Image (tube, rainbow, N blue to C red):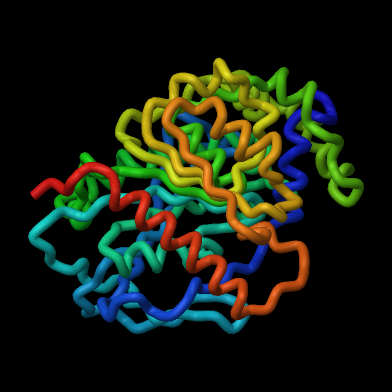
Length: 343
């Protein structure tokens, strides 16, 4: 690998934001939150001492019975029922696998997960990044963000485990499983639908990393050339991570367009909605969202005003909430347009 390989992740890291809830509760139903921890025996952890951990947070319509808890950040919060009972329904719930951006975690996308759960979805948000110890002390970017394709496999592993979960599996509609993500999480969602990275193409066309993280990138490049776990990851970078259970994808501000050739996108055969802000500086529409939309066979592109997630410029909290609410509504509408629910 060279300096330019995956340096695009550096720009995504600069765009990590503290998310806000997109607006007032749309419905009165309670939302439950639960956590699960799994491992993937087919992949090593970064230390090479055991299986890779895969952790998730679930948001779902709840019948109560849990402990009331506030979640959120920067003064924006919502009340959830920790380990609350999943609400009874005559229909199974559509399932959305949700992937966060780089340098982030599942809690940072609560604005979307909570909103979808309010509207009758079961949402599984991945916590791709491990603890500092599990990431071997690497930050900005973490190992998991630098070797970003590993995130797609995390999604499939978590999905398999959830479909066997005695509490949640009977409530999931297997015909309505989708993936959603923001920034690197959006690209993760596209990976699960069959998009294939070309690492050499990414190397040739990615910009150099921002100066503030260039030393970290240099260290990761050296690590990838000497560490056997990292070398194994690089060897599978160009693999297909298509999961046939994923039937639709919502992608907000996907980066890394430079690494996906038209040939690498043509096998994505599910509906895809791509949303991007016209003022996005981290993953600008040209070369990213527009590139994906032009070459994915069943993609639709929506360009909205503002930055929409990659907030680098000052913005009033109320305006940000309104903008994210609009994005959440787009996601809800898109997923509700997909196949009818199973009974």
